Each structure stands twice: as structure tokens, then as C-alpha cells.
Image 1 (cartoon, one colour):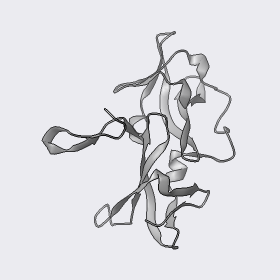
Image 2 (spheres, rainbow, N blue to C red):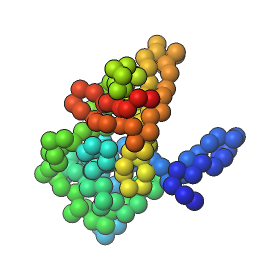
Image 3 (spheres, rainbow, N blue to C red):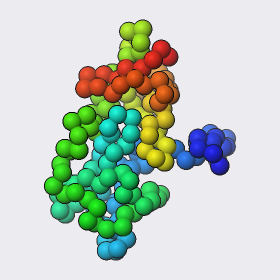
Image 4 (cartoon, helix red, strand yellow):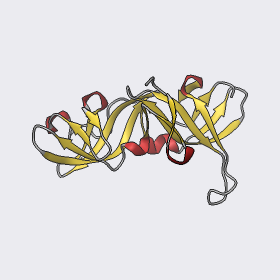
Length: 170
């Protein structure tokens, strides 16, 4: 199937294959295949611009960074890597000054080129290479009631800054 193909799932739901959401990483155990051991669990994701750069893994050794390119598989129950040595346990969150965690990005408001606030970042969908394909932006509601969700293609995202996300006219 092609990247982003839509297929009908159970009860007529639309499923887009070969795309990933942040929830498909966070909380999953990271398994070292060479060591036959669980190294830790994914706590957060680190992005540089529109690309997934690393996973924050928390385990017995503390908190470390696993480069996204080092992942062998992101399965339904675990993320597999070749060896625990692929995780930099001394890095903290210092990959690059322009790096942002999932939690930091989800706090940002989204503004379009006409100066209109679309809402706040809710979630994003990535392709298998870790590039953001679309962002989900929500308007405020009361306990989720009355909230409106807008999907913005990744190609329309201009910048993920420290204060906001800017997008072309939606």
C-alpha cells in the first residue's frame, strides 16, 4: 500500500496506514534485541523542525536519548533497537537548541498567515521516516465539549517556534 493510503477498518472507520501518531510511541517499552532486555519506556519525543529526531527513554540508568534512526521497529507492544548502547544516557534534552519535545509543542498556539489564531496544537501524524504529515489543531471547548478540530497538512506549517506554530493560510 502507498504511504497515507486510507482503508476501511472495523465498523466502517477510516484507517490511514503507514502513518504514526505520538501516542504510538509514548509509554511503550524499548527492547534491546542483543541484550534480551527492556531498557526503559518512552517518555517523550524530540522534534527538530518538522522531523522526529529522538525518543526520550526513561529506565534504570536514568533518562536518555534514543536517535529515531536507531529504531529497528515500532511494533504494537514494544519498540525494538539493536543494543542499549544506542541510547545516550548523558544527553538529557540537549540535542539542539531548536529541539522541542512533544509536551512543549502541544502547548503552542497555531496562527495562520492572515493573523488568525486557529487554536492550540493537539496532536500530529508522522510518516515512517519521522516527518510530520499533518497537525491536529483544536479550539477551546469546555471539558472537550464544543471543541473543534482542524487538520493542517505538514506542508502548510511554516515554523514551530518557542511561542507559536505558524502556518500558511488554511
